[in-house]
Image (cartoon, rainbow, N blue to C red; front, side, top):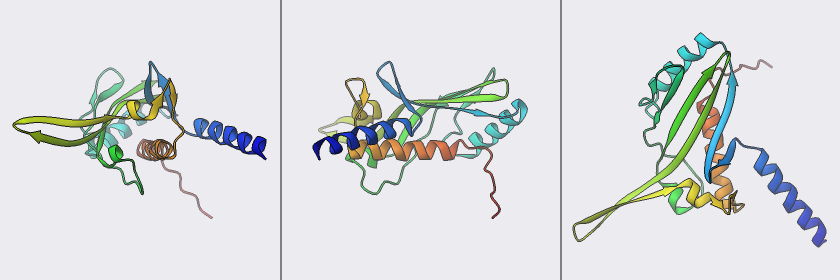
Length: 168
């Protein structure tokens, strides 16, 4: 029975690690995805999407590259860890090549409250990499897993330019 439980744990952690677009580079947690599309359509649709959303309207476009820091965005978690209950921002880079584009999101930081102690102000920031990584790997705790899944789902949905309509 113990062997079965260990096997189940290994399979579930492997499935979790392969089911999202998060990777680890230079001890940082990075979300990255490559999408396909026509060059001119990609730029036009991405420009429209990024400028119309408050979360990304501060990104700049230059030489086939959108990049910049986002505005803060709250996520709705059912039971988040304390730090994930605050809005987050991040750095986004969208690089374009012939008929495809790569989205890279890094430096995801949940922005906590500002504390005042006798005229000293301190802003509490919670970098996701600090809370989700341990010894160069993504932690397997349920809370971290839920944050990763929620962020992956949000980024996938947000950066899907063309949604397919299925007629049944």
